[in-house]
Length: 154
Image (cartoon, rainbow, N blue to C red; front, top):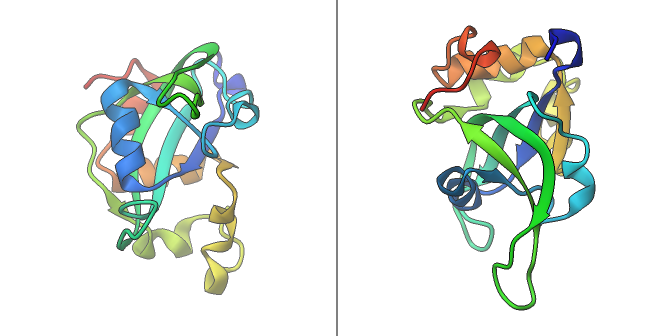
């Protein structure tokens, strides 16, 4: 895939939900809706931002918690319970990353236009960001820039 077609995304989910996705090698966006997943394509990169540790009653976290590359263009459903069958995409996560708090990065991220209301963009479940913003976050997570343009190794 050429670099012109590669896109960079931030998904928003609690740390506990992100951990389930990392362990299973998939991404779920916006409580399992298909529409946001259709925006992702094979070779795109995804970073998760976790405002909290858990969805219900979790502690504030405000950190980037996972990074990976979209494997293919297949969107599929997976039954988590009889009444919850969310949509997913396969993602190969970079396992050797660390969580990165957002506070030290706010002034360096262009997608955060109002630095005083920095949390506003994260009201969306999926945000497209520039390559530069992506690399800034990846570096803070301990992921070398060269990794983001090669096959992810865990």
